[in-house]
Length: 527
Image 1 (tube, rainbow, N blue to C red):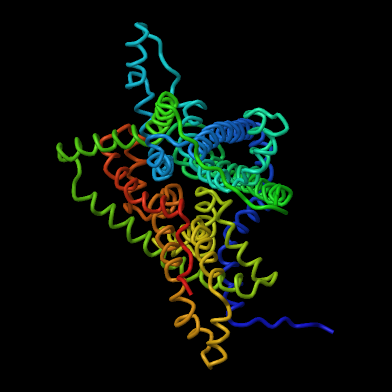
Image 2 (cartoon, rainbow, N blue to C red):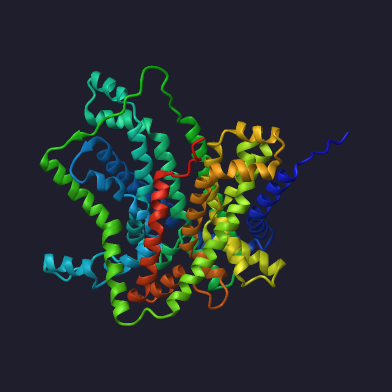
């Protein structure tokens, strides 16, 4: 006897949305394994060893650097009271407002031959010695570390702020020194936060395209882009994409498993958090100097240069009417994608939070595939899909919006799901008992309570779409440029002044999203 599973219209809608979001990746995987597999041998002999070495070494190097920077700054901020602490507490979040490709383009100028750093070094040493070129592993390591250490800082700071002081006192009572207490008590107990932050950093590094392309450092994402645009070899690009996504998925599952094995609970007693201790004047000055160097490298120097170049470009009349067109294109794409993503994400978030069956959770996790889908891979998936199945739509704005949905819907889903979980389901049940149907209940009861969280989700997705680069480069209609595309095109030609105005505007627009991310300001309205 065959059992027929009956799904509600809302469940069917959720399944359909999840299927549409995952189909492009499935199509790339199918194309990669069913095509000419002889390409695999050629790739392994020519490109794969270098790409694997570069991508893994960069991910490991950036992880170590961000761990040192993020944990040290978070520890000092939470444990010591000193002048300027309030500024540094939120100042270290600001580097997240600078896209990686903007930071890379600034540092190609700062660290290049004859640049400010080399001139200063030669002036101090009195020699003609050259500093290492930014177009190298070192350049990529510096740029990506400065760009991503705030992820570690945010999670480590939250973990240190919630740490139970009783554990530290117990360790010191047994004779442990401060360093032993830190390494043997603090670090093991905040390990879940550190693993989560490392996951964000590694995923960001292996999926980054803008920075590595401007620094000409060969990683998987840069190689995929070159296979698509330079050689028009979609088969090789699909194989590289499949390897990259497999690597990201393996790391995702490993992180989830490790997090489950690293849960710690307070079983007895009261939780007492540490109060920052006052610093001496000398220590406070040393801390401020240390923090200033990090902040200047990650945010201060890039923003100052962007402002200087923008003012120069404006004074010389290089900011023409076309700049307004780029702004309009970026705003139109981002607003449309964020609005559509909000509409598509609402059924998925609602089903997972109100009816958490295996099917609904699977649909939600399917939508989260964008987390492990780098921009060039998403672009390749849609490029192959639309050229093979719907060629009339290829090269239109529609394809770009679909790429944005796949890539950035997960960020909005987090905010929407969190907001819905704050709403008491009893309110919705009471409305249904009074005769209100599902859509009316959501419109009159649920949505007013989650409006703040959904607005935060829309804003976050809008600003992320404003910074999107690889998919826009590959899929945009002819002559349709956005702010991010103009930055990349001008920076690739080392036209720093022309790239500065759109870069500065993106940084300014990104700052609200950064503070939104740091505060997680998407709770439901009080009930």
